[in-house]
Amino acid sequence: MKKLEKHNERYSSFLENKRVAIVGPSQSAFFNENGSYIDSFDVIVRINRGMELLPGRESFIGSRTDILYNSLDFDIISGGTLRGVNDQVKFICCPYSVEEHTYRDAFVAPIFDKFNIRFINTDVYNKVKSDTNSRINSGFGAIVDLLQHDIQQLFITGIDFYRSFYHKSYCGERNRSATVRAIEEELEFKQYNDANHHNPDRQYAYFKEVIGKDTRVVMDSFLTKIIKDSKYDNWDTIPRD
Image 1 (cartoon, one colour):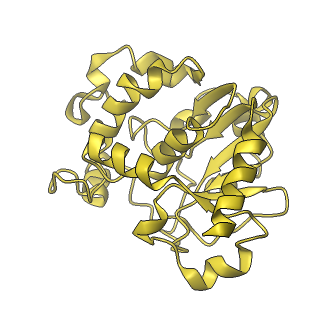
Image 2: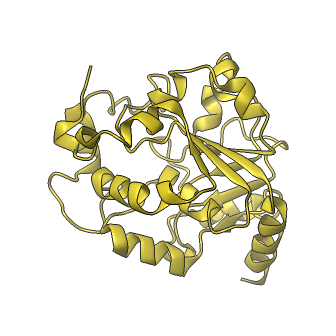
């Protein structure tokens, strides 16, 4: 725990007064070529297997990764096996509380100090989980965690609570999240109404009500558009082209 505290202190110091861009794996990150804009930020954050999307797509999602938020389960259909992670990455953060123990000790221990591994604050995690009555998705958890720190700005792209789908090249092994029905089956939020399952609608509502009003937050053009359109508030009324 003392090492975790040290990593948290380093993290807070690293983020202090920084302009941060967080890039998720949704299709909406590829609606505009924001690569140069993303690269202009002091810190660039990616989610789970997001680094695997980089080769050849830098004009859309930037070129480097300073922080990776990863579930640390070392499962190819969720957090992946940290493929592509290199010395450029200064911190690997888990968007789940350390008490949930989603991580796999045998894989985390050898890289714990090298990548300053840390976890979202347990009290913050539990409160947001309770407030949303939903298991937190990694991208949403990363946003929540970043805003606990003294950052200057947070640009968000590619995290849209399934208002668009995953990019077609993301996590190809599972390739399940390509249709509305596939996402419903994967997240199981139509079958279960509890805090142990992901619920994109309730996380999105929290995002709009709490995070979207944080003056440090800057949203990409897709998020900026949909947050003003009530049709995107409910899974069943989202326009699908």
